[in-house]
Figure 1 (cartoon, rainbow, N blue to C red):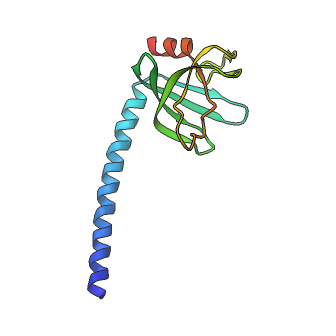
Figure 2: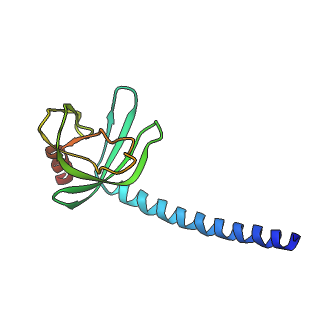
Figure 3: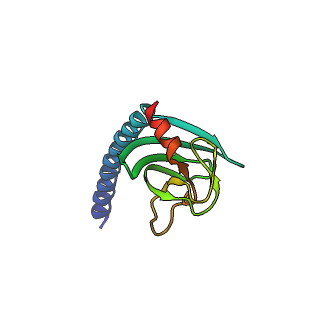
Length: 131
C-alpha cells in the first residue's frame, strides 16, 4: 500500500511539473502578445482597469485582455459589436457613451463575466488599432 502511495505522489509531481512548464510557456506567449499591442489603462471610480487590445478577429469581434485590482482577469476575452442599451463610459477612452451608440462589449456567457457591463466605443477601438 505504501508503494502505491509513493508511486501516486511521484506521478502527481511529474504532472505538476509538466503543467507548470506549460503554464510558463503560455504566460510568456501572452506577455509577448500584450507587449506588442495597444495598451490603455483607464482609472474607474475605485480601481485602475487595464485593457489591452489583442486582435481584431472580424469586423464584429475583438479580442481583449482585461484585468482590474478586484481580481478580475481575462487573458483573451472576446468582445462583440452591440448597441448600448444604457449610458456608460468607454473603458478605452473615458468618453461618455450614450444609449443607442455602437459599442463593443464582452460576449454574453453563463455565468456572465465580472466585467459584463463594460463598454468601449467603436470609434475608440478603431482609433486604438490604427495607431
